[in-house]
Length: 234
Image (tube, rainbow, N blue to C red; front, side, top):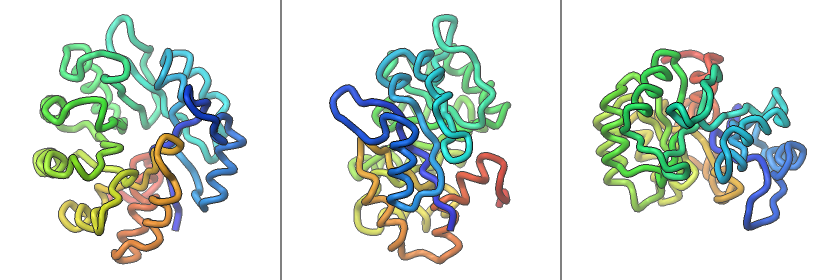
């Protein structure tokens, strides 16, 4: 079973000393938890200037660490990206997810078949609904949703077929199984949110899911590889 963490940070944190402050330390953490590869956002892009953080992703190991740039729309934002995965951070960088520039960016990303990571705390459920409604072909993975969001999250996933969710905070009893059963395992992706959130818990959960081997393999890494064009497209 290939395991891909689609929600990982690389770089120093402003409030803690972490092993993943550099690529070597992060690779050691992946080895410790038997994670084959990770999609990484640089902490400087999340907490500072996205342009500096995106440039720092050159430190990532192209074999196991896939750089995920943070994009900011509009003339004062970042330049475009030709990577298959990007992250949008409207809350952190103070731009409207449903503004004209954001919708234009979303349309361009949808046409390029780019996957977007979007943190649950970075926008309201209503904003996510309007954004996904305006660009229905855009593939969005909502990360860090947590148990308090399940009603809103279920409504969004009912309404938008291209919305998926990561497992980083789906820690309640059989929550991952519920989402896989209702929406299909192809719309659930393994992610940890580490080092901001725990990585050992989601990794252990992956080994104990009450799902078929095929569905577990999709969640563990098959879906991530499919979004990169490296696996079958069911």
